[in-house]
Image (cartoon, rainbow, N blue to C red; front, top):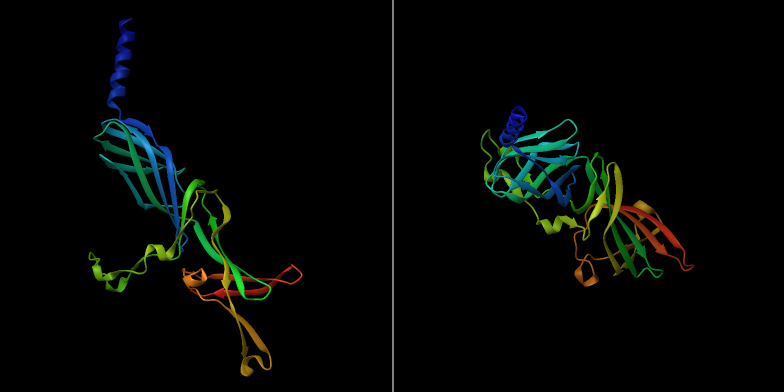
Length: 272
């Protein structure tokens, strides 16, 4: 009997010496996709910690994760080690000054995410107004499922680096420049979306109804001979219901016919 009690006490002492293990509970996911086939994954989770050394298993991350980009924060905690297993489970060893529930915030960049833009113009019978629909095609070529994620699409990176002005060990302020504001180049969706592994989806970014258009006639003998070309123009101004950035993309043009059938007029490329 004494031997059995001794064994139990020994096991208890061993357990007290080991670091506390905790598993992160998923709470909020934000996903930002850039034009360079990269995305920023941001997740906030609630974890339970003990004072002292803890080992946190975050869970599976993208198979195309850029490990150098991982940023992790939790109030009152210092992260000592980071490990990513062969099956892309991310974990940390950390020192905590607190005990109880803590909010864990993790950010990382991943490849395999991309998006492009297209427009659909629906011109009325008289060619006096048009409805404009802007669609984003999003591709997830990772093995990661993103459930109920708040998605933002960015047309270009804010920060540019002039590498010619950088010397070893000196990243001068003059070598970093920003252009535009984030509101001019980003499109946040107003609802959470699900983007599964190896899935492609289209999302409506915006629609504008009854935008005035003007028909003009062009005569260019050198290029078109006796042909008279018709062109439809609209102004990107707030008075006409627009006044918003229109990023580069394909434009598919349709017109309502007098027989209530839709006519496909053609497609053009909208330059940035």
